[in-house]
Every structure is written in structure tokens, then in C-alpha cells.
Length: 125
Image (cartoon, rainbow, N blue to C red; front, side):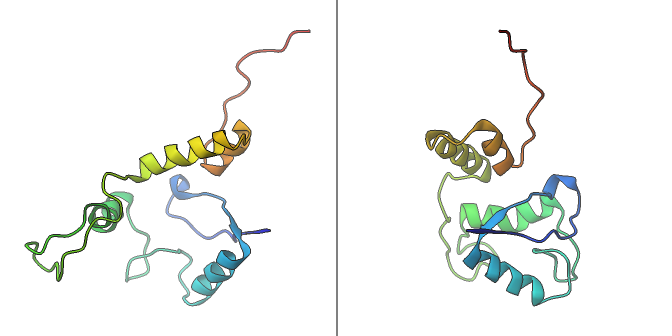
């Protein structure tokens, strides 16, 4: 059974998503949120929200691409998490899996944080 996540402050509406977490993960999430006073799950060392471009460039890209030994401050070579994989592709893959599992479109859109447009046509009898 999934446990709803409590809402926290967000930098803007683009980052707002409601996620139903499995109970075990919800417990870990609550412990993480209780471990600090900042209302954000991920924040800068100063407790501020990350700008999307900054977070992507400084954290996501190195995880996607890996780090070469030749890079200053690289420490040791770290291979990419999944070569050629991007978050964008992951969202599409997840959507495809939901479709294959016969999840209704409204539920798929909600899961991916998308809004559905109004009905495209009218029903006739």
C-alpha cells in the first residue's frame, strides 16, 4: 500500500509533483525530511533550492556522463550510471510501460505530472 508524501515548499510550480510512495520508501523519506529543518528534499549546502540548470549541469550531467581522470578534481574515474540514458528518455520509457500494463491515460498523465486537456470531441448517441 502506498503512503502519500507530505507536501513541502518548492522553488516553483514546475517542480511540484504528488507522488504516492511505497510504505518502506515513505518511511525513509520521512526520516530524511525529519533529519533537517529545510523544507526541500534536495537543497544547496546553504539550504536554498537548486536552480534547475545548475542542478542539471553540476550533478545530473556528471552522473550521466561519468568523470574522466583527466578532469581537475575528478579523483578517480567514475563510469556513467547508464550510458545514453537521459531523464527525458526515462519518462517516455515509464509512460510506455504504463501503457503496456493497460493503465488508463488519465492515471498515466497524473503519474508523470501532466495535465489532460479537455475532451477533444463530444459523444454522440
